Every structure is written in C-alpha cells, then in structure tokens.
Image (cartoon, rainbow, N blue to C red; front, side):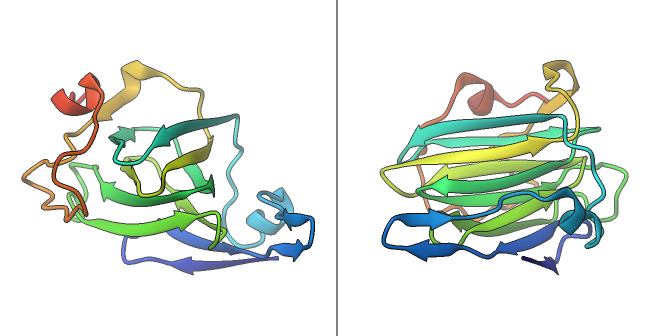
Length: 171
C-alpha cells in the first residue's frame, strides 16, 4: 500500500511505501500503476534509470521541460532538493529538501519543469528514478547547485561535482 502526501511545492508529492521485513531482508513494491493512478499519479513511465555514487557527490540541479520523475533511494541515504524551475511560475525558485533512504522507503513524484538535485550522505547510495519521457540532453536545463537565486541550504560546502553541474547550463 502507498500513502501520498502533498508537499509545499505544488505538484510535488511525497510517497510512503510499505515494506515487508523478516530474517531474509526486505520486500517493497516500488510501483503499481493502479495504486498510483487511484491516488492521482496517472503518468505513463517509459524509462527507468539509476545512478550509484559515493559520499559527498552532488548531482544536479537537473530540470526537464516535459519529463515527470518518480525518484527513490533503495541503497544508502541521500539529501534531495526539488526546485521549481518554471520561469513563468509564481513559484519559480521555490525549493524543498527531503531525505530518501533505504530505511524510510519514501519516493518523490516530481512534475516537469522542476529541478532535482541529490547529495550522497552515506558511504554510497543508489538514486533510482522512473521517467515519463525518454532522456534527451537537449531538453535539459542544469542549474548550479549553489545558484544564488535559489538560496538552497546544503549540508556541505565543497561537494564532488561533474563539469556539467559545476558550470550549469540553462536550456
């Protein structure tokens, strides 16, 4: 079963999943179209991806004009920031942080035109995501993790970044 809660960012949803745990480990149903559809998430996901990173790696802020995402952290612990990147929205630049981990079994539904960034807090972690569109770099915008307009409070001063995330590129 899933429980869906609204967040302070319109359209962004926090999803709690039930886990079955016993002496063998854990079992979690991470997606069931009927359950999500009846809770207002009627999106057809077409691609699943994941990244595996080590402590202090920060990926993002990546936004896409068309793509919705369903994100989770099945291994480790990550600090996730979602930012409204829609310049036409009165909520442009508004952000909210969340912690996703293998222990809390939470997911986030992220609508299009919202940027996602995540920082690895554990020794290593997997960031898992379903996408409603096929990946297209030309449609992506990358905002710097420390973009002055957003005033994001990160629990790190010197993260490990890719060149793309260091430079930023708004499409």
